[in-house]
Image (cartoon, rainbow, N blue to C red; front, side, top):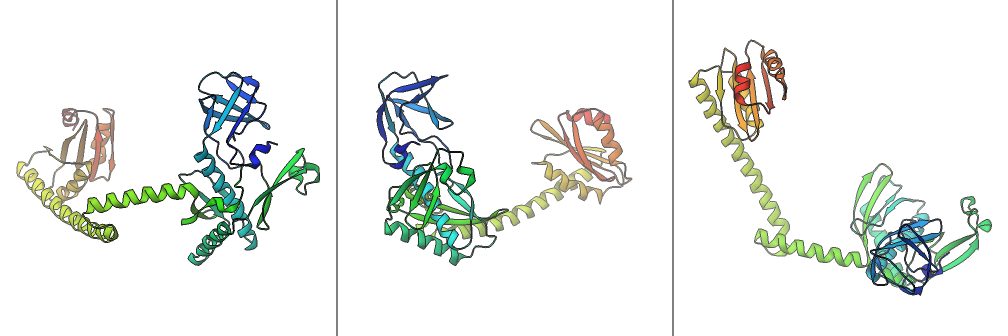
Length: 366
């Protein structure tokens, strides 16, 4: 058991190479922590070279750097990463204690600083319950409770799952929570600095609760503030008027969509008139999307008594519609599909589709 992990603020050491395997090094001692037990891996340097990977082989941590290493070995763990990874891990332990008193249980956690969350086995979590969790956690932070570690023989630990280990490390947060864990933890709860609940989502296992702690809270605050300022600038409003500005913009957008729909309807009516005036079995039309073809075809069906083929160029594709008052649209589609590279479908009277074939190939098959 690496006693260096008992002080998460220990970020440096000088040591020697113990083993080397395929570019991965093990050392007499290490201050680095590799991803395990829900805690993410450290970052940092060894002899000034960036650590690019950390992997465990049993209880031995192997380190890979961007280059070769030679004794003496000088390690430096990135402080910011260590603080972020450690504080959220300790928060999960404290939350375990909170929910145990509520006869509830945390069933899953995620320590990714871009997406910190835990899942509690409760389908319904009220707003007042979330407020209680947040207030309780911040009170624990203010109390600045010391963290202590004890070691017991695995054979003496009550849980049979741990009896295979020679030694089990117990992490104690006062009388709030004690559990076996080999990861790094804060030295006292005040080092969490902050705990904020951001929201919830219902999942099959219960309720996912999104949180932020420590330096992640600072990062999120800065990012949200930047985005708020940018949104206010784009909307030409004050920061405290962004919500109202978005609501106004959404209302205008809704009105614009209605206007576009009305204009599109008028445009389709004009195109329909052109097709009817041409009175040809095949008409090439100009449209913006395959959806326009699907809008035009039913209107044409109501106006004609003979079969019609509509074709249009859409980028590198040909869009088409077969209108058949006699119910032969699918038969014509089968002829098209015999050419290959044709996708389409519909009813006996209207079929729409696309193809990579040139328009002339469809006209000849028609």
